[in-house]
Length: 81
Image (cartoon, rainbow, N blue to C red; front, side, top):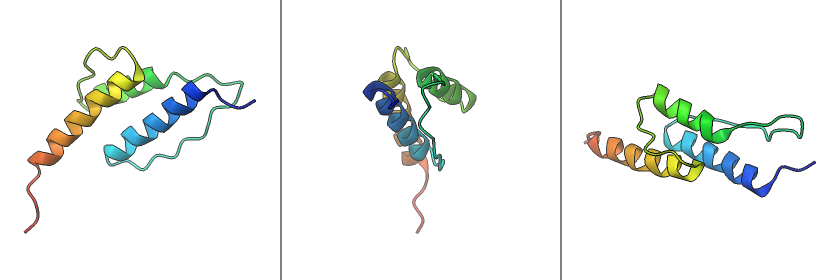
């Protein structure tokens, strides 16, 4: 049984968030027997790594919050000369 489009979008979003934060994460698509709450997992990860979650109403909100925070952090890092 293939995963739903919403679950696939969540999986791809989580992988993108992980790559943006400097982690190389390979996730396996969940089987039909396993439900995985990507939104809660991403929110927990963000909190554990001192990122604000904003309202965190949905997965896309969390990604938007994480994206601007990562951009801000990267802007603070001095460029090598």
